[in-house]
Length: 623
Image 1 (cartoon, helix red, strand yellow):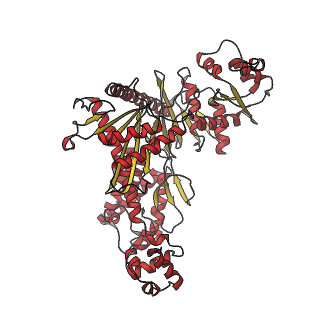
Image 2 (cartoon, rainbow, N blue to C red):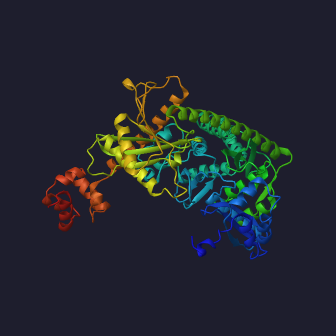
Image 3 (cartoon, rainbow, N blue to C red):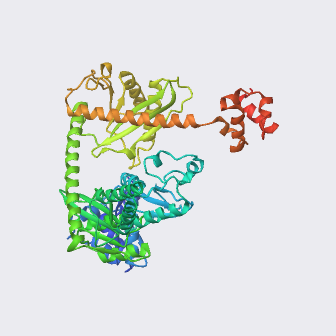
């Protein structure tokens, strides 16, 4: 080694590296990121003073084990100054949610919450479920905790207010009332069974009910019902009675409906054994619109208040906060969080910890709910760990698998062939990791399952091999093939060609007469074997196989439905909707167009000779 090489200093890490930054940092608010030697973000934090906060990490002692580990791994830091500590908090929440650093609190954020939309861009407004950007003109009610909660509420609202749920095109084409009118879930404005004024009254009642004025609406309907009964119009009175019952059903099914506030989100936390559950309850219009549990990942040393604060800040990163946010316990920067949410929402947002009264009682109930949910989750995880221990034993793995990939194919006589991959691990099925593979090979013999499996595995593992140096690449510990020794041989050949030698491989075939419990398992270099029909691990492996089959079948059906709905006329340049309609009306089907002569096509009204030639040549290519 030369003298020059010997004098090269190793890059600083840990306390020394952090101390080097302190000298140049401003005494101003901002956000800092700690990165390891590979460039992965370890931690994102905010500070009222970047200089003072970073200096606290440069001390040689007095750090907790968690912070000491974080500091020791730090090889680089990045800084962003902000105008205020409030802006720093908002930026910190955004970066944590996006980067998911190892030492921060993180959770898997779901899709946007569904809402109920009362459209206002049609003379007879439609009531429907809505998710995503609020671009349609109308009044939005929500959020609801789940699509199921919306569906149940919509179903009952139809009975209570008889508003239409059909699309505009269906509405315009109706000549007689549909089934919903017959079962008293729609007032049939499409066929004039109710005029615009009467329908507007129903819309007003629905809007009042969904904005918390349910008592006034019910009182008005009771008066109408009694007046109809006094006038001996019992059929009309019965209709009002049914609507009142539907409203009562909504309220009774919601469980807790507050009397002291109309709009709030409630966050209730329970921690146990280093694990946490946070139940989020949505209250709108003085009604409980559902709840959803979350299980954020965090270091065991973090206090429950720190976990709750980080979770709430991230929760509102991309969604607006209501006027009131209730917490089951206090957090370190509650007032600062309230100011940040107010700034983001451009209106006042109060973050409170109820100490007594109805709000406190509801918060205690929510904490009990979180405790029970966490207990169920931990019990499920314990059972899942036992199953993975069983998988380790069955297939002779060194450790319980953290990622199992299961592959299957689906087709009908080779058409619309699709390969599917499902993923399972300690947290059960990981549906966000599922993948489908449209079979692309043009040389493949229709129905050749072996060739399909070869294509799927080659595409999947060629990509993994290519990205082997990327730390985010997720390699399986076990690959399970739905099939017999033939599929296993194909998989072994693919692995050998790609140089994959550290992934366990097995195949599972259905038993004689496709009997569950009599499956055979195949592994390279081993004799086929079966498991005890009553073994829990066998049921688990059957579930994996069945899930891959379900996903493959579903993907195939979607592809087949899309293919059935496709029309070859759509692929011809110059054939728009009008000329396509003219051709289909004249010939009856796309197949008849394909069989028609040039003269016949030219005879279609609206089709020029030039376009007719294009259509004819499309179906009769030369050369």
